[in-house]
Image 1 (cartoon, rainbow, N blue to C red):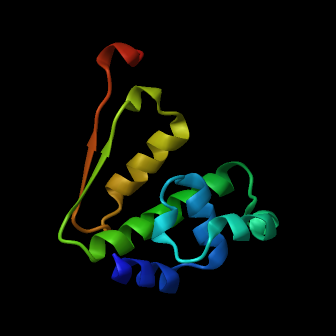
Image 2 (tube, rainbow, N blue to C red):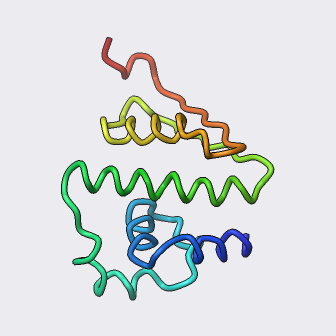
Length: 118
């Protein structure tokens, strides 16, 4: 895990780490510096709107998965309750699954059939 954290530091700028930490609450342990202290100072530099924000976040998440997966023999990413997913989330999942540079990743998704419109 420490090796992955070190590679994350090398791969990402501070504002990208903050962007990821804000989007992936509960994953702050992946990053070395205290996110809570950095957030007030970085908000202006990481605020984007609309499609640009979604694309930047998708790119950062794919890069993060590349770093993690390249340091492990295999990663299973399981997401439950996909029936509640919005379009941006489904676009992110699609971009992760289609990214041929992410090695050793198995994506498993689950949803309730009665929760998805026909």
